[in-house]
Amino acid sequence: MVDTLVGTVAMGPVVPILRVFNGELADAFYVGFLGFRADWEHRFAGHLPQYRSVSRDGTTLHLSEHFDDGTPGTVVQIHVQGIRDFALELERKDYAHCAVEIEHKPWGTALDLTDPFGNQLRFLQIH
Image (tube, rainbow, N blue to C red; front, side):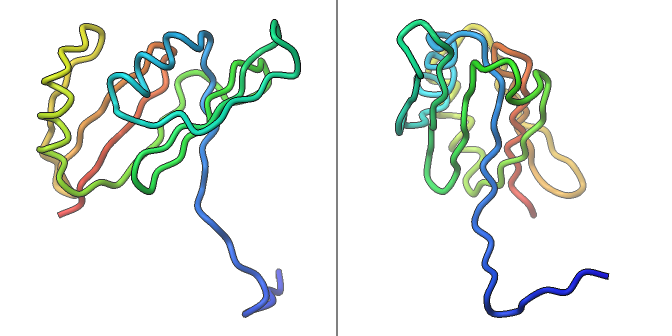
């Protein structure tokens, strides 16, 4: 059994690390299409893999070109309000590589999008 120190331990938000292979493609999808903001990036040297943070509203994602960070095909669920407006915003951008289709499920309204690297972003508005 694990003891916890109630009142002395606080956990913050979860920040998924998604494996990407190309910074330009990642920018086109996450910043250009989804409307995330590029917060910061890091490289140990100019030719080495990039590690960066992007965010929108209360959601932060880390995107990494490093071989040992993340696994392509990861699913991340992001809870949203105003999912229909979000879908309309995306449709207006006419991004050719991703279909914008809302699905109604018993637990909420979902919009599943796959990035150019096989990671799936599941936007969900819970009923």
